Length: 330
Image (cartoon, helix red, strand yellow):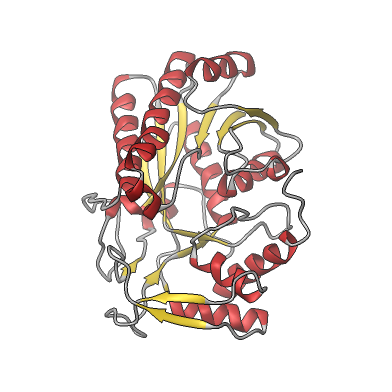
């Protein structure tokens, strides 16, 4: 199989590219390198520097590379940034996705896997949320992703085209073999921030809210190891290649950890005490966001291999240590 991976030099994309290469697929990566890194791309993959919204370029890649399927990661992912720059997010995540989908249809690519998000659900309750819940995103980021899901559904109804949209919950950790990891400077993900604090890159870590209706008063999230998430993309490709119908599926483990659980795990695994500061809740943060992950387990040949908070944290810590020796200009 020959797969075009947009955003394949980024965090989740680079892990998926390594997985595809490991199993023998041909891979073409399209990335503008705005937030991705050349060195993160498996050397066996072809890297083309360009814009996912360049419909003519996508058409050339599809025609010259005999592309069988597309995995679409390219996009912007910071919720507060999307509130400050909604038009930028609708351009990057929605308009450019529309161009990519149009090029796929024109080029005869019939299989498409989309990197979506649990942010499409908006404010969830304490119980795990499943795919039948009505989407109600509260940020331009979540809305921009939901719009792309809607476009994919409409295109699948009108053309010989099928897709899987994977709604991620909280992605963390790094490649257990140390080949790639989360490298974006200024990242806001909790485990990334806590790992940076443990290795001395940040002086403190702030906990936003201690009065939620949860066991310890802090927010609860479903954390999935990035390698398990990468495997889910390959399972989605195989599902579509086997004739599977278009599908939207949650990607999580089905249980959550609180902010203080994560802080405790980082302290335990690193052997270092973190300077934790407690602040007020952030507007729009739900008490808990946990996946009902029954659908993906039942429809795909996929089962998580790294459902262990200490393992997730350990790989994140090792990657932070490795980044101190990494030349970002490579």
